[in-house]
Length: 296
Picture 1 (cartoon, rainbow, N blue to C red):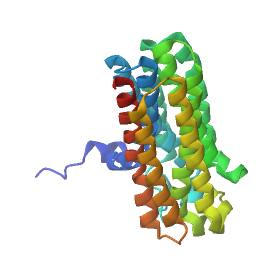
Picture 2: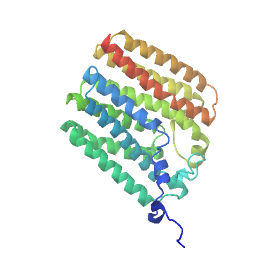
Picture 3: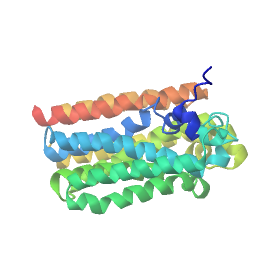
Picture 4: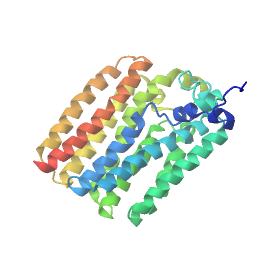
């Protein structure tokens, strides 16, 4: 009689479902929020539809780097994650996955991401190590600064800089406006995201903008939204975009006002996560506005 069937993942000690959850495969909101500003950069730099191969490279790169980033985050925060209700079941925190397997997957993701650079301009190759450094630094910023979301914003904004350089081969004034807008946007939506963990973060000593601003969190998020819109307006002015772009920004501003108003009152963690996820539509609206502002 034949013995029990042993899956290849079990025999090798690798849990493939755990690896998928490690990189947040079921939830790609973070990938979209990293990808969309790079699309802004590609579209504005190309003054329309960017080269298809660049679109494909930055879609793949956004997925790979976001996946690598969350592994770096979980490796750095393993001991913290075990003490947070929302994160204690993550594969590393729960012990379902070893640090060795996580490190191997991280190395593989970074190697594949690095291979994409061979299809891009030399300036992008020089900019790429900064992106990796920022992604690795972000998890530790929660230990040092009260607004670690600013470090996340800089990391996400750097993708926009790389996208612009991939099209133009140089860095022009509008891209720094897009960079600033992306950084401010990330501060805003990640502060909303951090509301989910306020009580646990306070107990274990992890810093976040949601904790730092407390009852004034709506004002802080509103300021970040305002800075984002100011940078986007400046980018449109420098690029001589037409009225549909600014109409899109007005629509985004109205959405922001609704979120600021909601933040005036305490919100439950699931609602904070839902507010965070809706920012994907903000990125899409701005992308549509960029196209329309160049075509009309």
